[in-house]
Image (cartoon, rainbow, N blue to C red; front, side, top):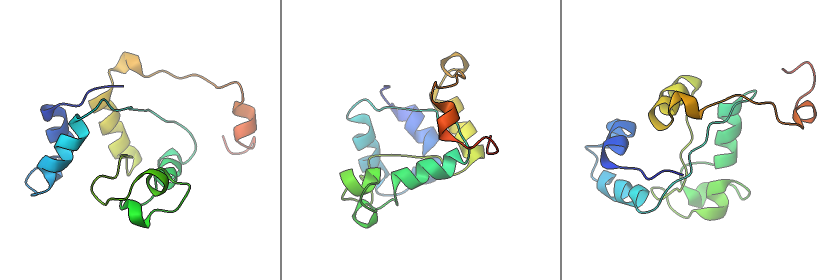
Length: 117
C-alpha cells in the first residue's frame, strides 16, 4: 500500500490535469492509501483490464472489479495500464527497482499449457 500525493498524481494523470473534474478525482485518490501491484503473465495487460471492467462502473459486467464495486464513471476505484509500454512507465513511477522481483508460483504449471509459456 502507498499513499498517493499531488506530484505523483499530476505526473500519472498529466493528460487530465487541466480537466475540470481532475481535482475531484485527485482528492478521491488521496483520501486513503491504495494498493499497487505489478502483474506478469501471458497477455497480462488484457487479462487485468478484463478483470477490471469498463471505466464506468454502471456499465461494467458483474464479476469485474468495477462491475461489483463501482457505480461511477469517475470514481471507478481501480486503474490498470492500457499497454505494456505504459505499464513499464507506470511501474517505474510507483515502484523502486528493488521492489519488483521475479518468482515462480508453486502452481505455475497449472496456470498455463506447456506451449503457452
